[in-house]
Length: 288
Image 1 (cartoon, rainbow, N blue to C red):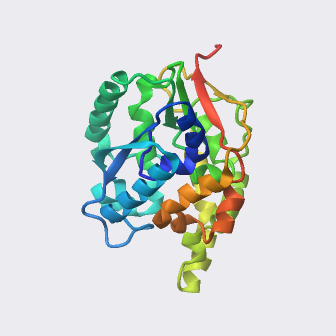
Image 2 (cartoon, one colour):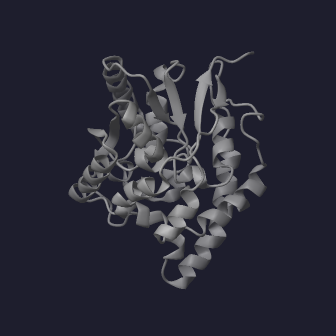
């Protein structure tokens, strides 16, 4: 499951090429309606150009792409155009009907598919659309054939994965944890090197943004808490497998040029960030 057209390839591209050699791969893209965009966005939202990017990547990695055509966050509510709202970890109340509709559609769709592996987003980074996908697929979370991927590029932010796993009820052993203040400053050092801030203009904007990001992440990490109302599962990381073809993966990511350029200044910085193998998780019954 891919919240947006690029998420599956950004997060699982290396594995998709390997899985494809074992059988067909279907990528379910959820939020693919970009109508009514706000005047300014982090990355271009033109539907046809985004679909062309998807076609190039799917051809390169030989997967099938399915579009559910739910409206992307900043298009259905312009208030999500603010990063402090888009990544705050709480969908607006107006999204509750959407969540119910998406949950029903996914349950019907996935139950009708014969699959060897179901790969879902962990919603690392707390992007509202990723959270909606994670929550809507909850009935499949403990399925024995379900895995969870760490959402990239957000999973590349230091401590974002450990705070998300702890929020989902994971133990300190499964995700080493650093306090919110220290983690926030560590996260900011990474994000401040990303394209949105590095390419910001004028220079005063970059200076202000670099000062705000530590505060934002500190507040975000303090906010993330265990929110399970029932007994949470135990979250188990799977052993990392050897990196598949890195350059093929980078080529597929660069097929989504509008999105890659929104985060990484050039291919070298992309390669440096993505040379770390992906990690996958399973939700298993708690031993408690």
